[in-house]
Image (cartoon, rainbow, N blue to C red):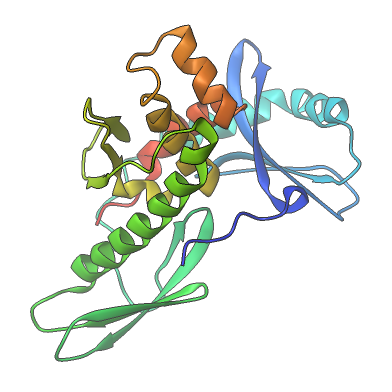
Length: 243
C-alpha cells in the first residue's frame, strides 16, 4: 500500500531561502529536539528544529552558515553521475524519502515482496537483481501515484485520469490533450512531497494546458510551496540511482 502522509509536525516541509543571491531549497522537520541542526546530503539541505522554534530564528541560523551551505551543496552537485547500482544483499536505496533495504534470495520463479522498510527480491536464472528491483519499484510507483492522483483530483473537481508510467530521461510528467497523465516511475526515488508536486503540476494541466500565471495559480491551490519543491526536484534529479 502507498504510504500514509505523516502528521504535520513530523513531515519534512519544503521551504526556500536566498543565500548570497542564490535560491536554496531546504526541508524542515520539526520534532521534540532542543536545538536547530543543519545537514546536507544527496537530498539537499535539511533542517531539524524544535516544534516551537521561530521560522525567523531557523533562517537566521541558515544565513550564519550560508557559505558552508553553498559550498556543501556545490560539492554534491559536482559529484560524478552515479554509476549503475550494484544490487546485492543489504543494498539500501531511498524511496519516497525513506530508506529501503534489499534482501536477496534465489527461486525458480522471480518474485518480490515489500515488508516495512525491506524489499525481498527472489531472483531467478532469467531475471537478475537489477531487473527485478526495477519491476518491484515500478509496481510501488504505480500504486503510490494512483493513490496521490486519487487524493488530489477531487480537490480540483476533476475525475481520476488514466495513469501511464513513463521512462523518460528528462521529463518527470506529462498530460495529454485527452486527459491522460504520464508520470516518470523514477519519481519513486524522490520524497513524497516531490511526487505530490509533480502530481499537482500534471493535474493542473487538466484545467490549464499551458504554463500561464493561471496555470501556476491552480498548482498553488494544491501545492502552496511548489517553488521550493520544484527547486528540490532539480537538485535531487542527478542523484537518482541507475538500474
